[in-house]
Length: 96
Ligand code: SF4
Ligand code: SF4
Image: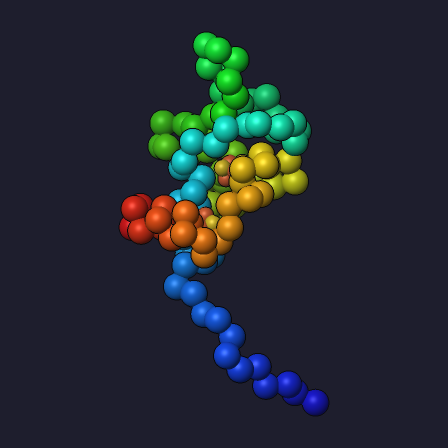
């Protein structure tokens, strides 16, 4: 039996067509989730953020797929950033 799905929310903003806009933001590391040292930038006061390369993206983004290469160990802030949220939409519109 096929179940007909109706009234599914559609969004024009999805990670699959976004090219990781939010991964160009500054991401503070505020808890230890196991981010590899090579992706961490430490400022003069010891504050840790995700390292961003010259192209502006977090160093952990796969440049071909725009997927996170450290997904299981991504920072807490990345886990909380919700697709379709106001913050997401703002980044999506800024980059486009
Ligand atoms: S969460 Fe939003 S800004 Fe981030 S990759 Fe997905 S659609 Fe883009
Ligand atoms: S850690 Fe992963 S999800 Fe977070 S900004 Fe970097 S690439 Fe994006």
